Each structure stands twice: as structure tokens, then as C-alpha cells.
Image (cartoon, rainbow, N blue to C red; front, side, top):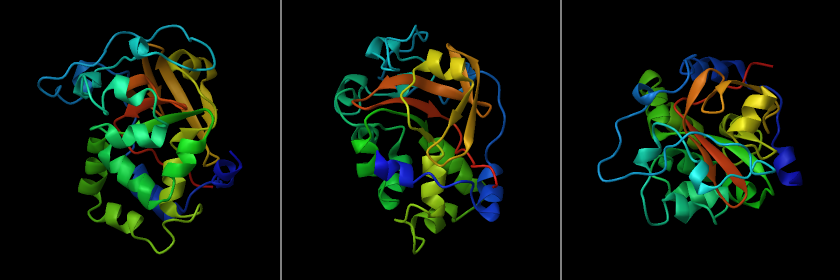
Length: 228
């Protein structure tokens, strides 16, 4: 946990904020039209969020959201396959999070996230990174190949740790809290309801996903740390 806390840098460089911030737009609560069409032949749980089970730990039956149907029903990337793995490993098997996994690996954060005792992760899905790349061609390569990319103070590390909270919450918990402090040091604003929460105005596409040490909420935007 000490290693994680050292990653909490306050603010982000103004130039980077401008780049990433352009791709973070306020949206209303998640509905079926907010997510991509479900992948054929897959059907993960997509019910409503339920009351907390204690300490922010969720069960597979608590998973909800319009994009959950894109998660495989069996194998390492399924809900059952992810539940006993630490979050960095679990994300690497999830077909919605391949770009996030590559970014976390480049930033040397996978082991750090895996060793955290209890965290909440707001995980941008692959289309979020694709949208960022479309608006700013080359930004992904720029971030993942920077000379200091493996440093806790790299631009990529600041972006990624802004998506992580050092306490474990379920959907009811994040909405009740209203404001959360990220590992990057800046605040995250939670809105909506436990059945349709938003993070900085962006709807949760699939939430309450349990892993061994984290509760994961898949979102459709790459979030931007505010300028210091």
C-alpha cells in the first residue's frame, strides 16, 4: 500500500489535461443506448445494483450495466474467471480492457494494483481509448513510450492512478460518498444512482465487478486529472 500511496501525485501537467480532457464529456446516466451493441453469443449478468455486502465487496450476482453482456460467460475473462484474481490480472483477461491493461503494463502499475489490499477501479473500456486516439492521433504511443513511462510521476501513471481509489466501494458506496479521492490525488465526482452511477459525468457501462482485491466499474471515457 505504501508503494501505491507514493503514486498519488497532485494534479497533472496542463498540456496533458487539455489533451485528455477534450475526450471527457459529461453524459447522463447509463442506458442501453450508451453502450456498444452486445457481442454475439455472450451474456454476463446485467441486473440492477444491490445493497452493499460489506467493505465494498460485491458478488457476481451484483454486476450490472448495459455493456456487461460483452463479457464472456466462461473462461478467464468471465465474471467467474475474474473473481479470484487480483485486479491487474483480472483486467488482462477482460476483452473490454485490453488497452487499459497494456497501458498499466507500460506504466509498471500491474504489480502495484495486484498487491493493493482493497481498491476501486474505474476502468476505461477499449472504445474510450480508441476515441482518445481518434481525436488526438498518436497520443497512446506518446504516453506509453515516454522515457519516464515507468516512473510514478509519468503522465501515463498520473492518468491511470486518477482512475483508482484506495478504498473498496460498491455502486451504493460510491454514490453515497459523492466525492472520492483518487490515488493520483485529485477528486472524482460520483453522480446518478446505485443502479446507474456516473463518474465525472460519465456513465458506468458495467459495474460492481468483483475481483480478489478490487471492485471494478467499466466506464466509456478516459478521465482527465484536473490541472493543479
